Image 1 (cartoon, rainbow, N blue to C red):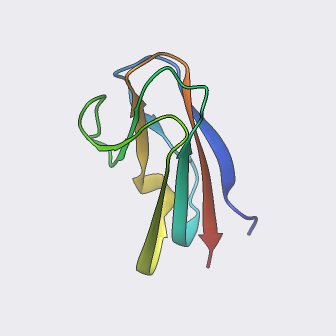
Image 2 (image 1 turned 45 degrees about the horizontal axis):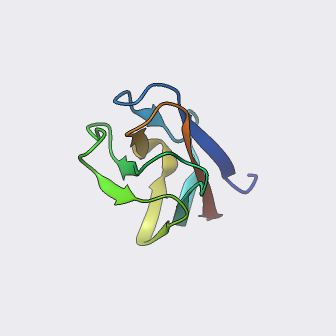
Amino acid sequence: MGLPIGTVTVATAGTRAQVVASGSAVSAVSFRARGSNAGPVYIGDDSVTAGDGYEINPGDELTIRFRELIDLRRFYVDAANNGDKVDYAGVAA
């Protein structure tokens, strides 16, 4: 299994984007909002919305560690502005 690293682009603000489409079990994951983003991005599950999720401002990072393996497909990103991006890196099992 490859190291799960990539970028999620929220094409349309208010329309969440899944972090990965195929399974990647991880024991930790970091999300970093691009410094060039126009506004905050939001991390959450399939109910995340722009304005309702864990807010990350441009240039900021969130790292989550798990007691058990978690599938990255459970995470979604939304943004306050079209085209904003979130980089992610998971620690593979």
